[in-house]
Length: 471
Image (cartoon, rainbow, N blue to C red; front, side, top):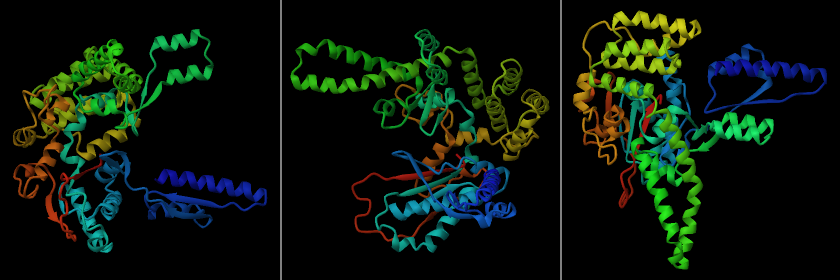
């Protein structure tokens, strides 16, 4: 980033002065990931340090966080594209996909929706030709379809509260790079203080303990995608089964006892998830504010409660001193489902936002408005009711315990992006789907040329790679 370049320049200049005093020669190397940019080199040049540093690239590309989750960790893509109109990061996205194709084979079918996705698809085709992928990549492709979606095609879903086990952990505590920091209970902190624990140990307790959340944790793999209402019964059943097996241990054979002892390894994991689920339960089901937020969101998605949601946003700001992010998510949802915030509330909410969070938040508010997340209602057609009907986004009788539809993740609302992936995998893709035309931005479908080996794909399930631009 520009800020990093300025910081590096200052450090190099300072180090050079110190080295000159000691009559030593200092050597500096700067590595860019995933690639060098002209503007960064120019900043180094203007600072007078370009000749003193060796520049190189470290293309980290896709980082595997899970067996089925890869990330470029470019968390500023949406802001760069939608607000700053800087499209350079789209080249990095396309390059990463082409690097994957070099390993897994050319992806034969590409489907997508959105302006950024269209740019990336064009870059993929260009880079495929430049790298001669059709002849140099593996003959048998391991990925059948690539689905490219802009973040802007589905702003609704990230503004709603996630209701799966993993989703609520992220909402309440925040998951960063597969880690969550679990706060230590007040009783545990008090016990540590009473036992004369050292200052460092007590400070560590105040910070909480970090817990890895990924599929290597067998129990988390089983719980992560469940609606939170199903997690408690699942944990109780596992605990009861372990107790029942322990009672019958005397009547078991040696091999059965050995198998039971192996199962005991899951007990610490079971304790951790029981503790974590209890904490989430306290902060959600027992919190009237949380339940009111959910009701407000569900009313908005159902097409009612606009005025009530705006008044609730004012209460969150002035009455409950909620975080800036929480308030912005609610106001954004109002704007998205209503094609704008009602005029009688827009200026009041904007003034209140700046008054409470300070004028330093003005740039954030302007960026959000520039991205299209929040705007003043000026009349005109509201596309959300059509989208709801066309893609069946609201499922009234969703079974959260035994789900047969993706709507269980929000207890009745099906993420639009998931519906678009379903549509993209149908014959013809998105190009000829009339319902998709309701969403702004181009849709496209095309086939990539590749050398298919005999029996390609035989005996395996179809694999789809879905890329969300700006996620």
